[in-house]
Length: 160
Image (cartoon, rainbow, N blue to C red; front, side, top):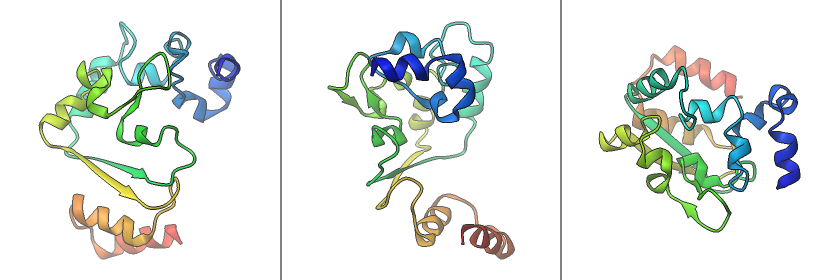
């Protein structure tokens, strides 16, 4: 973990590897909080220039649909797809999204959306971003307004 953090949290890797910007190592929170992207977006850092904007934009969502792939081998822990995560300081305790500090302190508006019943949880059976068109259409039908057929045909063509 220390070796990964030593590399992943450097400016060089943060600028070069997009995925490193989403890495939150529970044993390396001090280093994580120095990185420029995710801690700022999650309002985990003091005096963020955009904190009010990020939070108000997030809270303005009509609906937040969180989809977890049950067999995900890319995202760890896969519960983070539903905003859950390990408690800071270790890998022993996995928190649900309502147990996390970003929820309890409403850092970026997740609690606000949840209290308005705007947070929805779904799952797919496959691995990361491996889902069927039936899965996609099921979510679209359930949570979004119907789109003109031409737009759905275009989406289907892109997914082939």
